[in-house]
Length: 61
Image (tube, rainbow, N blue to C red; front, side, top):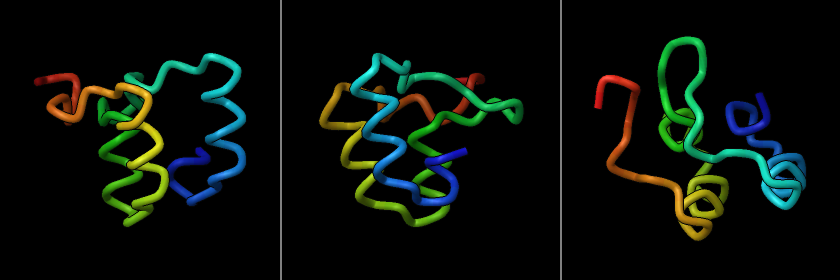
């Protein structure tokens, strides 16, 4: 997963192609929280700038 490994270029490309930044992984964690958990702040910023729901940490909300 690009946001887990800090692959900024791939995350940007996927977002530019319309990927849903409010998706959850199979552990039910949001992509924002995955990037945050791995300290990939540039990716977190990208998600938030595009409107990701920062209040939604996991699917349990």
